[in-house]
Image 1 (spheres, rainbow, N blue to C red):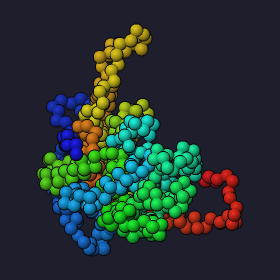
Image 2: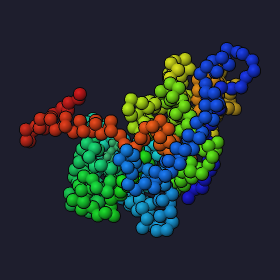
Image 3: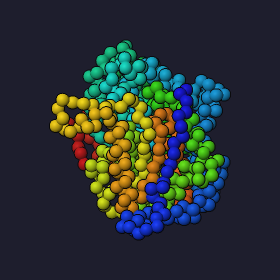
Image 4: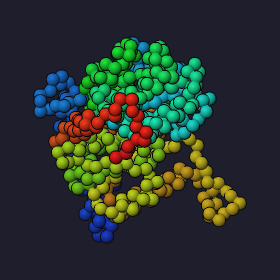
Length: 500
Ligand code: PA5
C-alpha cells in the first residue's frame, strides 16, 4: 500500500469580512457581501451538537418512523472494510472485491460498467481522478493488464449503446484471445432501474452471442453488484451465478453514498488503484470528523459554512476544480448534494466548473453576475508529473520567450491568483478545499469529507439527507409510461429508432 501523503485541508478566510480600519470601496463591498466572523462563531455549538446526533445515528438499528430513511452505514464502511481485510484477508468483503477485480483483469481486456446515479458517478470520479487521462487509448503494454473501461446504462441513449455494441462486435472477434475479450460490471442496488436493466439485457445477450450461451466464461466476465434482495440478483442467480460471484451493496448505504463499497472499489481495483490507501483516507476523515474540535474539523467547518452561505441567499454552489482530473468528482458531488438536500422546496443547486477552463465563460458570471453563488475551490498543491515548460523559441511572435523558464504549473498558479483576487476585490465569497496531491489517499479523504459534510448540512437545515423521493417519482412514472407504449407486433423490428 502506498502510504499517506498529507491531510487535505479546508480554508474559508476568503469569505470572512476582513478587519480593516479605513473605509475603501473594496472594504465596503466586502462588509456588505462577505460573512462576519461572528456568524461562524455562533454556529459552532450547533454544529457540534449535530455531530453528536450524526454519530449516534450510526448505532440506530431500528430508527423511529420520523427518522427514516436512515442510511448511515457509509460513515464506518471504510474502517470496517479495512478491519475485515486485516482479520480475514481473502475471505473478507474487501478480499472478495479484490479477487473478483483480479479475475476480471486476468480474463478480459475491456470492461463495460453499467449503472446510473452513484453507480455511474462514483467509478467515473475515481477512474478520472486517479487513472491515466488517456487510459483507453494506451497500448496494452502501457496499460499493464488494466482493461479499457466504458460506461453505459446510465441514460436511455439508443445511439451510444448501439455504437458500443458496434465497437465490441468489430474489435472483439475471437473469445479465445484475452486481448479480444470483454466483460461487464453491472451495478444496481434495487435492480429495478430501467436504464441499467435494459442495457444489461442487451449486453448480456451480446456476451452470450460472443462467448456462447452455455460458456462458463460468462460468469467470470460478468460481475454483478447489487442489493441483498433485488431483481438483478434474481436474474443472475437464474443464470447460474453463486453468491460468491455477486457483490452486495449493504442495505444501510444509499446509492450516492456507496463509493466505498464494491460500487466504487471494484472498478477502482480493476484499474489497479490502491483501494486500501483510498479507504484509509476515508477512514481518517471519519476519525477527524468524530474526534476533532470545530476549529480543526474540516467536516464541521465545511457543513457550517455551506449552511451559512445558503441561508444568506447563495443558492448556487459551485465546486471549482483546479484540475481537469477532478471534473467527475464535481459531477459526483452534484448528485450527492442535489439528491440529499434538494427537498421540500429547498437546497442549494450544485454546479461543477473546471478552472481556468471555465473562467473563459462562466467566469464572467462568477465575477460580475448575480450574487447567488458560493464558490468552493478544489485545488491541488502539486502536479503528479514533471512540469511542461514554456521554453525558448526562435519565433517569438507569441511573446512567450519572457516566460521560457516557467511552466504549466506556474500558469495555473497565476490563473488561480487572478481568479481569487478578482473575486475577493468585489466581495464574492469563496472557500477552498486543498489536496496536497491527487492520490488514492487524498481522494479517499475528499469524498468522505463531502459525504459527511452533506449529511451534517442536511441535519443543520432540518432536511433528511438520506432517501430521494423525487428521483423515485421519476422512476415510477417512467415505468408506467413504458408500460403504456404499445408493443410492436411479434417479429416486427423497428427500422429507425424514435427520439423524443
Ligand atoms: O442515490 C440513489 O439512490 C440513486 O441515484 C440511485 O443510485 C440510482 O437511481 C440507481 O439506483 P439503483 O442502484 O437502484 O439502480
